[in-house]
Length: 236
Ligand code: ADE
Image (cartoon, rainbow, N blue to C red; front, top):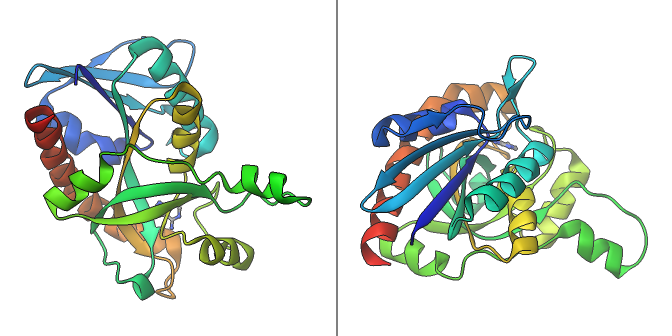
């Protein structure tokens, strides 16, 4: 692979990884868009990390910023593989644990409620495919797989849970399906890497649980991404 491009929402999620590879910020590369490019090289592969950027003193999480970043990254960097790496909520009832890292096997939306016929339903849910090599990678590295389910909120309303359960969602985030949607438009392969900060069925308050576990989950995310980069640059 010549170019691998990460799309990451939060500085906390990207920083351990950026520090590990010593990749450097390229100022104003995407200006006037808010996303920020970090660029370096690993084993002869160009490694790009695109952060969604910030607004009002906080990281731009969510589908809109992720779609902007992914579109700009694909058009400007023409990567061979997009990797959306970040944190997620998961479910104790499916055996998930805090700071466990999963590889996504599909991506869907859970909060796009559009009444009408099956076509609206199909479009709303999304159900995007991932890079076909995802399963072999997960198997080789001993990582679990799960379906990423994306929405615009950190909390989970009962109607979200119903859609998640009906459609087999397991890894609840705020960007994965948006990144996968844009990748599908450009026929770019996407690998989803998600580390668990909170358990949606733990009964705890989500933001408190997320904040308490964020740095631990980001450390396991970095460790997983090191193994993934090693796998991609050495075996492909
Ligand atoms: N990111 C981390 N935890 C999350 C959750 N529970 N929902 C959405 N995005 C998340």
